Image 1 (cartoon, rainbow, N blue to C red):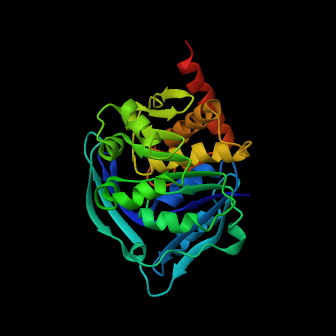
Image 2: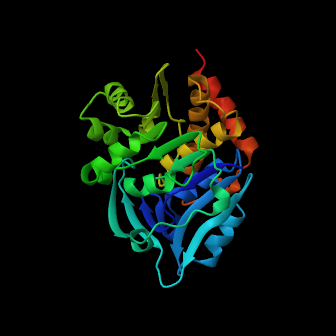
Length: 306
């Protein structure tokens, strides 16, 4: 077991045109771990406060698939869990952050258990890039390192982010973030510009328009699954990354992933994310099996056949 994810654990309050979900389990590592665990065991590093509900901890202990090792989860006495409140508009590509309480995220980074230091596949979920670098230094045997980022760090911590990009194999970000980072409005050019900053490949998430990969060996563009109903888009990007990295970690990772392997991984990521948006929080993912993912992947593959 060597896939590890670091990032945020949160309590979310979400309102969409379909309804409202107060104080539900959220956070980047939560969605990632739930998605990746369908393919391989996952190690989780993150921190929550003493207000973290026991029911949420039970959910993390009993995720479907191969499960999640929680030895790297800190429940800190005297601290409060990260909280986010979001409001989605009729066009659910548009949302407002109503409130953010950083709480434990503003404190020192969680400790990485010594047993985790042999991790070979590392996903650095969205957090301060200096923190991502500090965490990465604790995985000397890492063979595949992929990071996520956001506009906040691009705008305010760009030197640290550029230093991080020299140390990772892949970067995952959305279309607006790619344009902001590179000053390129054309996404192909933006992704190519990212490769010049250090990574071997770049995955750009485009929401309902799918995703695009730019790699030294070529370009892959995949559409989204044609969802009939979207209940809650929260965590879609993290579950996409979890599905992608979970598939890669379950295969032969003793060498950098090929373009073909990354294409298949993106397809699985697309499928996992398509389930995630069908309900609030982890509700839909908790109902799934690997067979459900494989069935939808088969339908997705038939849809793409020409």
